[in-house]
Length: 163
Image (cartoon, rainbow, N blue to C red; front, side, top):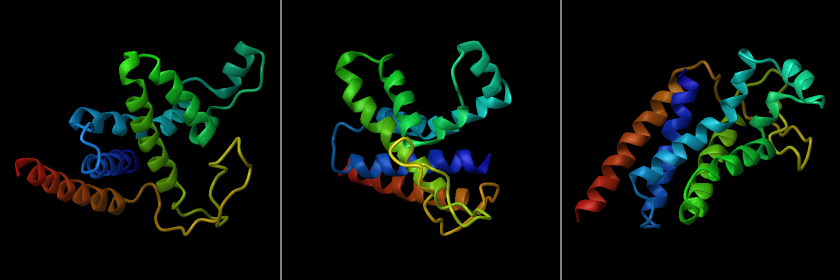
């Protein structure tokens, strides 16, 4: 759980920082970025429905882990964009992408026994980039740091709006 909350804080912070440059990014749009940060972890649906079950139903190769890549996240974002009004689709796409990419980047910094991350750039490449191994997803410290950063950026943003 600290991992998912950290992703939400990171996406929120990035969206607020972007709102300093782009006036159209309101608190509601910051929420869209936070939703985008949850997209890669849709892979957790495999705990309910296995990849093998979906593969049998569809009759084609299938793996939920593809959602935790740039390609899978892009497809999920494109599906998500279809449920908003056409005039909001570009902005929604941009902020869902910000959230999903911030999630993938943060996960690229995770500690891994092999010293390499997952193939996050699939389908562009199968390359597993090296990871600096900064933290584990179960550690609370990254979530605490992200929360503090989110509060500071939130307060700075509020101060900018009051001027």
